[in-house]
Length: 473
Ligand SMILES: [Zn+2]
Ligand SMILES: [Zn+2]
Image (cartoon, rainbow, N blue to C red):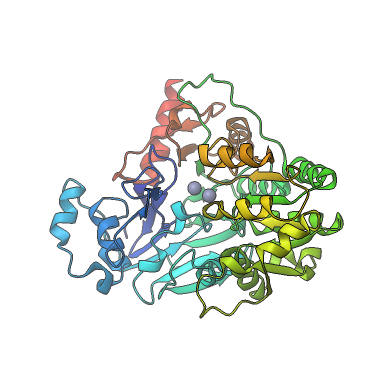
């Protein structure tokens, strides 16, 4: 029987897009199913008129032909591949031979595009495993138009549940990251144990989850740890700034809202539903109601309909949400909330927090010119890809005398926190993916293995090189 091995299709020397297949015997498990941030097509760039992205209806062909996703035809919807010449795809990968498995299942750790972009193009019925709240968020993203749906067979897993693939087992372990429901996994094939963190941070709302991951991996004597290293710099001795904790960030928001006289705008990612819930609760506590752009309201509503574990009993679940009518662009969509006009919000600026979306910048012209309280509004940018310094945002803030605040802490671990994790778990070897500078990670004496894109290595060969390195030291 073939021993456990890993093939690295993505996330090697790049930020995002982790695609690794662990396989043993005839069973394979691909973890994460996204596309790298720096790939040819992602993120979408804005031109004057339309976003630049994959061609509608040909997305999968372009991802596969561009080498952005694994050349494993059994993972994909044949209709979407549209008779793509796999010989050409093989050339993209230098005609490298990859191990084949009778069955490949997929695990998706969280719902950021660089981890799930390929999900809508999965082969109908492909088994895809994910944590419960990640699934709830996905349902929200589909409802809000942030992602197409999938024909894959999604298997919803609870925290700490174990899936048995015969040749090996996989345990789902919830982590902390700025996407709701993020989870890592622990693979156990009876000979070796491999842990994969997914994207994570130690300064989030749930540091206890990270501590638990470390403890579980240590108790189980994990041999090989695969972690993210997004924040690493080219210089291994560079000073990497500390991020504020989530509690500090929420306290900062509370201060801003309690002091604000005019309208408060919040620009954040609706894939972090826990932060969204906390900001909503703080707004309500300060006597402000919630108004929202339509797609965010749809995501919030549909995800919560699935019963998000993380928000059980949260005060924001009862919040009265109004949707800005101008953002309901599709008249066929039934809005789960009442709508409100820009004029009404402009007339009572001090009563609302507006969960805003960047392309709706023009709303500010009406909101800040109509009604009273001109020049007293606040614009809070909270971990969104368009920053306060963006020339278009800056221009609006300046024109209308709006005070801008940046309340961000990012979703990724400080390199020091990663080193603490490596030391705490004490694996025989560590692999840092999801990083442009994996060699900058300090591993506190643990052997670091650096795979290449497209490489296949048996777990025992990686561990053997660790032993060799140890003997030399
Ligand atoms: Zn990522
Ligand atoms: Zn992420």
